[in-house]
Length: 328
Image (tube, rainbow, N blue to C red):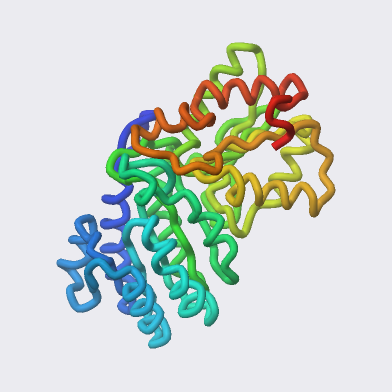
């Protein structure tokens, strides 16, 4: 890990996956890596451990089913592919073959949210809602490529399955200096301290949230940014602390359907713990098929881009949500 650090430096999360799995292959002789024809970044593991690498072709259901069989035999299988298809085509296999027996299958994938310009068939925008609904499944969404390796390493000790959501993974902004935060599955990261409001986010929108907080600082407002990279189990204690310390003013930003993802899970904590909020607003994809375009353009089009995020935070610190949309 380099000593120097530049905020916003670009790094490939896919390369981190490849190098981490190759490293872990030495440590865990029962580690297998499987892919449904998306194995270009797995060549290090494939070349070092060809007997523990399997490309099944374009057959996500088969890939997850084989992974479950390998896990039954005492192995640690990692499935790496594109999340729009792993989360939906293989949903039944994930639910019944992996989650029901609580097997240690790791599902790692790219194209979470409106990234890749592949159109609605190639966007994973319902995936977090689906995965969070599955019993025994741990669900993560990672924005910093340097965190990917740490999460994969921690997952090796888990008894049950985990879902790891990434962006396209070719060129991702480094958000944190190595060692700056204690990265632990199940715990959120306070990426920026603040006292006037909290914005919760994950994955590709963490950087956008940090930029929005910078703009609020120009208004003399202090916004806390929470990278809730683990959606399940959710860090309810951190949600409760933020409610107490930032005036009960919440904004949730995510590259996912506005309902069913992180905002819905935080709303559950608010209700279950009877937290007193003064405002709550969710920013995400409305109930539409998003269409084609650059991901930043699509965020602007669908009301959760940078400008919309800044506006939502300004409403929050003013103590009111957008009256045209209600407390969403």
